[in-house]
Length: 472
Ligand SMILES: Cc1cc2nc3c(=O)[nH]c(=O)nc-3n(C[C@H](O)[C@H](O)[C@H](O)COP(=O)(O)OP(=O)(O)OC[C@H]3O[C@@H](n4cnc5c(N)ncnc54)[C@H](O)[C@@H]3O)c2cc1C
Image (cartoon, rainbow, N blue to C red; front, side, top):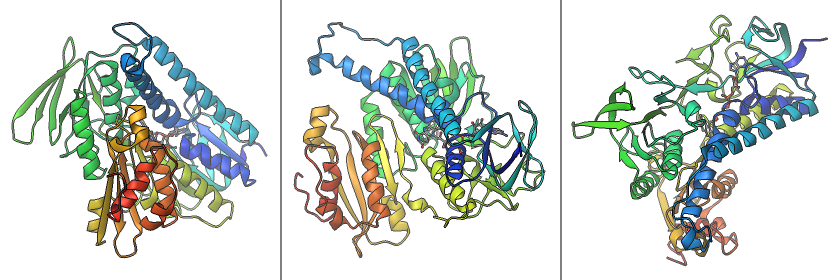
């Protein structure tokens, strides 16, 4: 009957749309409620895809600016950017991908219900605007309402001078200067984009190092490279105030030595993290257990209310925190849809979720950092190999960075792989498979890596872990 489904998914981000497709593949009648005018959520529209498109432009500009080195016959002394073309290329990519999800919905006979979904009693979702109607879910409701930029107390985001990533991806003009608060993935990616586009960039991080969740050696290498590129880095620094003036924003910040730093920039980008989206969802009325706005779930993504599950950026576990990553929300969507369809539940190992940061140089990591491995009591062996030695890195003109392997001395098992340098966001796939298969360092050494490739750095780092690096 119309409006009756096995599964109703609220939110069409990488969590929701993937859960819906997997549920439909397994024979479940599925609807997705989405209130944005497009499918795909943050990742496709305001996150992963637009930022990586801008970073690719930054990379193209880098090659063009080094035209003499590359023997290109561009013949211009200064090479610039047409931001209208940059934006329209980015928008075309986004449109193609979101349209692709609409196609997949049709192919899998998934209904897109346009409007805001509200939990309205057992197995019921009310659409409060748009296609006003009530849907029933015989098996499960999946909440995948995602996240949005989170502000900082005392700093008003006016979306003109003080902006978030939502505005930064759509800028039609390159700011002369930009201050960035926060050096997580979003902050450092925009630092790379704007620096390459020609802005003066200052990045302010409260914690003592950039990309604080990465291995310490990676943070140190990124700081070194950023400084070399002319990005001002202020770590251990707390922004106290941000005042908007006629020409920009004036910040006052406390540096680690107790001094006050004054920073003036045309724009301030607040990239201090993202908070859960539950507005209009009726989560409290439905009785969902929450923690600081996030929906609490168990290891199989069940909320405390039978018949309602949740995945993606909007959820939280007891400990440790739940990473906000597109591929993780998708993996959770697949695992959950399979559980709802009565298949065996395949739990995700949260120690094996790769993280990629597409700044310049790129970062890819999976598993335990050296510090975490030691904190868990492992007798740790470490091997590091620098990209600079590799033929392929020299050919690409990208010789910064390294691959670092963290292993358990007792069983030789690989516990973590951390890399910063060319193609690290691709190379991390091999490391992720190695962790998934509980590979030993010896097995990685005996895996033949093609020459000349960047992946040779992974093999050499494995060799280095056993003290047998060939090219070092
Ligand atoms: C600038 C930026 C760059 C990023 N880059 C990366 C990256 O490179 N790699 C990576 O893995 N991750 C990246 N992320 C994170 C990634 O985008 C998120 O982890 C991912 O989108 C989470 O997916 P989700 O399905 O949980 O939620 P979302 O993608 O946020 O989707 C939630 C959807 O639910 C809809 N919705 C909310 N409430 C309702 C309601 N009541 N009714 C109907 N619809 C509703 C929203 O409109 C939205 O479309 C980035 C994020 C940002 C901001």
